[in-house]
Image (cartoon, rainbow over all chains, first blue to last red; front, top):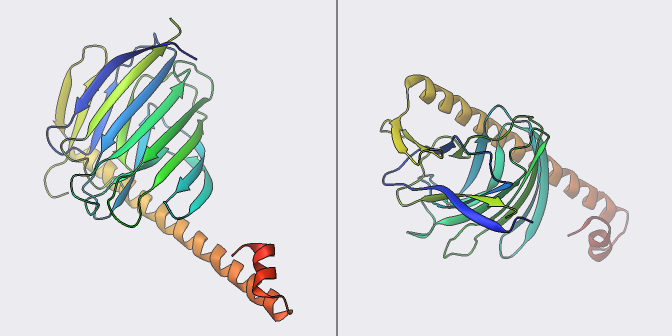
Length: 171
Length: 78
């Protein structure tokens, strides 16, 4: 497990935006960690967040989800994005944001890439969600950029949403 | 989205952050992705509904054979 963590870049949205891209990611780290706090303009309490890494992925994943009153699991293959979890949509409790952490080990490797996520959607109501995803992406290019979208590709991340990319090293 | 959507690009090598209005082509790509996402969502919902219906049908058949609700739940879940 890498022992040091460095903030590579971050962004806090000053206005609504449809996507956030981290480009020219240096290949000098061992692993990457993306942490985000986001809310979207979707007309729902929840909104999936997805990542499109460089190139066209063919990703598969398994998911564990808890809603506070129940739990479920599912899986999928042949996805063109990385599913990461749910954040708050526009009808969730005002000013609440969802939080997601994405861990990408060996991101500079050209072998199949794995990722894992932990997401908590905030909502001061009867139901809120916790999501865990574990995914495999079979594209074989080193990860040098990725873009974060809402999973419907039709709404915005709201101003105040923040995105932090960390690099982890062994020393 | 009624206004022209924007994207944020963070260049990790320089730290530069830019907010860029999407081009017509990028908007079209986004709309195509949105349509595909909606299609995928509907397909997933249909699959889940079909599974739920099949489960209910199986439970009904087991009950018709004389199993109690508790016994059916033990076999196929509540």
